[in-house]
Structure formats: structure tokens, C-alpha cells
Image (cartoon, rainbow, N blue to C red; front, side, top):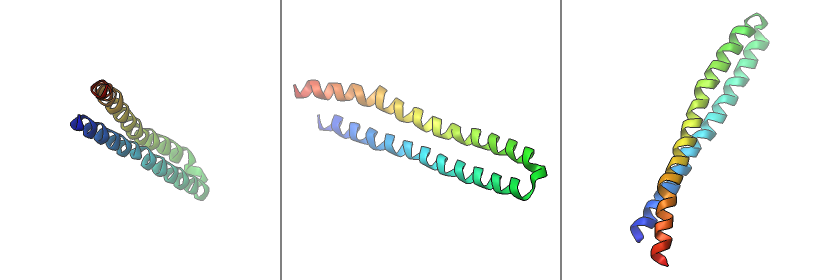
Length: 92
């Protein structure tokens, strides 16, 4: 019974850590967008190239946030919830 509780706690901590990746992605994308706007302000002729490169980079980095969310949801709903139900059955 204690082992199940420890596994559930570890999954909750792991899911929280995985979701921290989303915060890192948001900070990085904001920084990139700010630098792209700064570059467009300094060199308006290159704004099309900068915008395209910025959007491509943000799309690629956003996939990291989506993967971390997917991992977190998989951990919770495929492992933790069934174990939690089993723990509740054992406790009565």
C-alpha cells in the first residue's frame, strides 16, 4: 500500500517537472519575439526574413511544450489514476 502511494507521489512530482518545460518554452518564445521585433525595428528591409525565421523557430520550440504536456498527461491518466483507484480499493 505504501509502495503505491510512493509511486503516485513520484508521478505527481514528475508531471509537475514536465510541465515546467512549458514555462521555459513560454519565456524563450517571448524573448525570441522581442528580439525579432527589435531586429525589424533596426532593419525594416529584413522584416520578412526575420518574421519567417521567428515563426519557424517558435513552432519548433512549441513542440517541446506540447511533448511535455503529453508526457505529463500520459503519466497521470495511464499510471497514476489506475493506481489511485487500486489504493482506494485497498483502503476500503
